[in-house]
Each structure stands twice: as C-alpha cells, then as structure tokens.
Amino acid sequence: MSYPFYLVDVFAETRYAGNQLAVVRDAFGLTETEMQNIAREMNYSETTFIMSDQEREGGYDVRIFSLDQELPFAGHPTLGTAFIIQQELIGKQVEEVNLNLKIGQIPVSFDYENDKPGELWMRQVEPSFGRTFDRGDAAASLNINQNLIDQSFPVQEVSTGLPFIIVPLVSLDAVKSCRIDNAGYQKLIERAEAKSILVFCPEAYNQANQINARMFDLYHGIAEDPATGSANGCLAAYLVKNRYYGKPELDLRVEQGYEIGRPSLLLLKARESDRGAISVSVGGRVIMVGRGELI
Image (cartoon, rainbow, N blue to C red):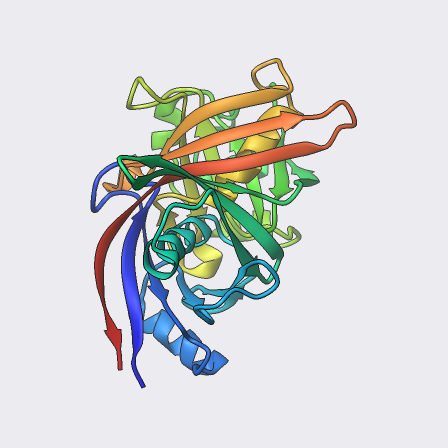
C-alpha cells in the first residue's frame, strides 16, 4: 500500500525558508511504530499523519510525531497540515479547517490571495503560566552575561499546549550571542516541565518586524528551530500577561531562524479579557515544496 506525502515550508515568505514539514495522507493503515519510523526517516522537526481523508466530529484526525515521540500539539505542523487538507482534500476555498489533535480540536482559519491561501491562523488553547526562574540560571544556560536579560520582566514557563521557558533579552546583539551551555541547560530544565527555551528581544533584522526570537531544545535533539508556532503562542501570552507593551492586546510580526539561515515570519495576535482570560492566535504562510508517495 502506498501513502501520498507532501513537503511544505511553514511560516515562510519564500520557498526554502521557514520550518519544513512532511505531511502523510490517508494514514489509517499505519501502526504507531510505523509512523514513528517514518518520522525518523523524514528527519524533519515533525511529521504529521492525516489519518483519514474524511472528517470526524467536525474535524480531521491528525497525529504529530517528532523524531523521538508523539506530540499533543505543535504550531507549524498544525498550520502546514491544515494547508494540505484545504489544498489536497477539500480542493476549494473554506474559511476554517478543524484538526483533531491529541490536545483537542484546533481550528485553523484561512485568508486568500488570488484564490490561493495567504495567511493561515490557528487559535491556541488558553495559556497557563508556570514557575519563574532565577535569571542567573537562565543566563548560565545560554552562556551569556546576566545583565543581557531584561530585568523588568520574568523568566517564566508558559504553555498553550506545549510548555516553553520564555527569556526576555535586552537587544538583538544579546539574542545573537546566545549559545547553549549543556551543564547550565540541564540545571535549568531539571525541575521544569518545559525543556525548550525561547529567547526574544524588541529588535529585528527586518525593520518591518517587531521582535526577533530564537528557540533551543537540546532535550529533544533540536539545537535550534527555525520557526516555532507553539513557542510563539506562549510568547504572545507572556507579552500580554506581563504588559510588555503596556496594554492587554497585541498584533505583532516575529522573525525567527535568521541566525541559522532559515528566515521565518510568524504573526501573533493576543488579547486579555476583563476576566483575565487570554486568547492567542498564531499565523503565517505555507508554501508547497514537493509531493510524492511512501511505499
């Protein structure tokens, strides 16, 4: 039996930018072990499997695998898979596609340009905020001086389905200077739910953008990720919760991956209601790179 698969770049303004994704279609005949082995063979940051071409309970069943485990949620796989569902399964313009993921049903909405998908947006689950960390420990994990961490805001664990440690830095030079120190990193994450670190600053290489970010995840074998939708969703919640821009809402352009030659653009919208609930949406573009069959 053969399985169609697709290669896409997510959060990409041009081909061969952004974060790569492999999407396998009509995968109901594959066992969990086979899906894990295919994810390793693809050797991308994640591979997704659309379990059936048919909807179930108003959405499409999708499973996400990294190189070493199944994930309940991840940002660029969600957008990239929704793009393939709209293009290859539905074949016409729709306002929204729902993905049934391990974490629950995630809606993805579409904007169109000349009958082709432009920006895709996913609404993430309501964020939760975990522990804060000593700035000295965070600096040691990143092999930087502690004074490069913005003292006005916390180093904090945030989750919108996957947890991340958010570290605010003072400048683009500070972001560029980060190099993971393994001993410091292991100390930082040993008691934390989050194993991934997102650093950011309010400067950018591209003047059209407001924030530059980098994401490190040695625990899962990712030295540095070019574009991380789940982490940036956590960043959006963090910025609103801590009133980084002095107000309970934001609409931002975030660049990531510049330091590793995969320039990406992620779009963030977030708002805190009068009740204190924070809604987060992460958007970006998806570009088809190739297609084939697994046999």
